[in-house]
Image 1 (spheres, rainbow, N blue to C red):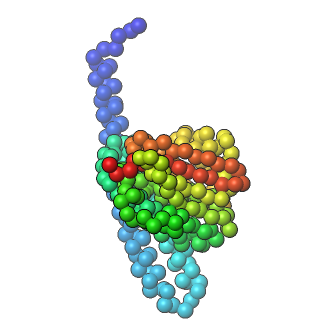
Image 2: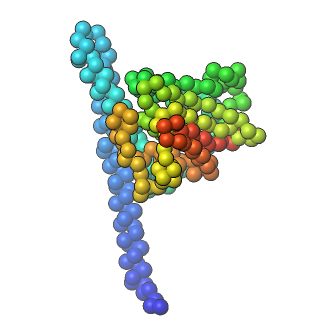
Image 3: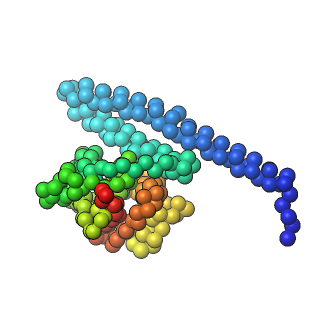
Amino acid sequence: MNEVSETELAEARKQIQDLKEQLDKLYSIISIELGSPLKSLKSMVDLVQMDVESIDNPMVTESVRYLNLQMEKLLFQMSNLIEWSSVQVKNYAYKPSTFDIEGVLKNVKNFYEKQAENKGINITLLADERSENFGNNSNMVQGDKRMIQQAISNFVSNAVKFCRKGDSISLNTETIENQIYIIIKDTGIGMGKAKLQNIFNPSRKSTQKGTSNESGLGLGMITAKAMLDLHQSEIQITSEQGKGTEVRFGLPLEK
């Protein structure tokens, strides 16, 4: 076997460093050069929508609402791209804290309620309805709150995307010993075995359009898995075509 010379090793190290610098630059472009203008544009659309609500012109009002919804979807996709590249390129720092998981679920539900309503989908926070301990210490978990909220948002976004008019989505929690399991369940179109097996494979990311012809980058589930891998939390998914999907993962209770 031929030995690798010091010159060849040095050249390989230089190529790796150059590639890292290019990836860092790409990450900066995505997060700053694209992310900041999009957020500014969304703020402007919000202001326009506030003004047009008082205009007696249904076409203009509906057009601005549609534009606002599309901006929200674009920002969400951008957020996934930034988070995924952050985990893959920048070695995102895991910053655990103690937080109320049902409060996070409530935030996600509130964010997607309007989008679900526009598709005729009912979204429910079951933990909120049945738990007299809502917001109490029994719901306190350990993890990176921002990453967990992003992961849950990705699962709910996927559920909304693949649900039809009349379908439902439920968010729930279940405590087993020292873990709280977060459960996102829908009655949407579901998945076959082949798609389910490749759902977290970056090279086989889904390009399937949603029930209202929604498109996406296919990074939502992959990004969620990358974040939950940092928590050492396994994602369990059960699904059947025509009958819906259930996503479940656990987080440790507050010690």
